[in-house]
Amino acid sequence: MRKAGSSASKGFTLLEVVIALAVFAFLIGGLLGFLPWSVEGVSKVREQDTAYGLVDAVQIELERMGFSLVEAGTNRLAGLYEVDFIDRSREDVQFDLLLVASRSGGAVAFEQVVENQTTTVLNSDQLDEGPNQDFFQKEKGGVVFFNISENDDPISLYGYDDVHKETYPWSTRWIPEEDRYFLIKCSQFPLEHRHRHHPSNGFLGLQIDIQWPYKVPDPSKEEGFRRISYKYRNHFRLPMAITR
Image 1: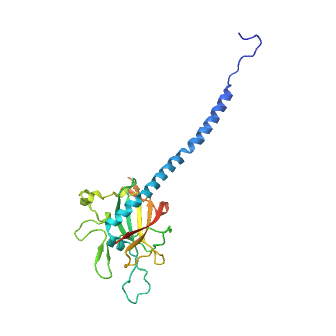
Image 2: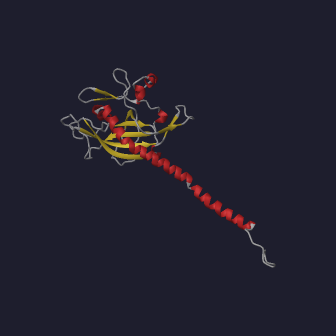
Image 3: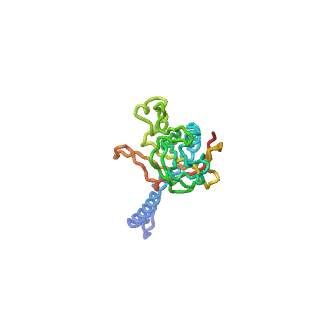
């Protein structure tokens, strides 16, 4: 029994409860503010891991395409067989060979060969796509086709038509435009680089620049996809070589 004159036991006042809730809400709000950053960070790490995992697939695709096609598709030399040729740099045109992969990674497919007049060293941030190329005329005769073979079969994704997209075995290699999240740009090293190429070499050294995002779905576009500007892409660069 409570003694007479003793004060009643005290609880929290309304003001104290309000202050406590305000402090709690402030702390929780601050923690939740980091949630979007955490989710975005996880997404970036996942995409980076996927890009790293494409290295083997790129090597396999280049070897599947064959030395001759890759050499022609990354060509940057002219006049190599001319006796009086001094400047071996190909000033009129340089080629970049483009491969693509979906956002989930896995298989890599040959998209096209483009003209690029600003090919630079491995760590440059100035590489960009250029006009599509259909073939390469060899100096000693012969033609290397990039998009469609002499039998009208597709070589690159650029050479596909609606029939090929649904016909085996070409359908197994088709990647829709809106799913081409990763772009793999392959180019030869500059002439001043120690890995520069010469036709007498038994190997072809390449600069590989894996970029993302390249293309993303966009229902508002007539094509159904949107091409991301170069300056907003992430990059993973590495050297690679294939043998004859």
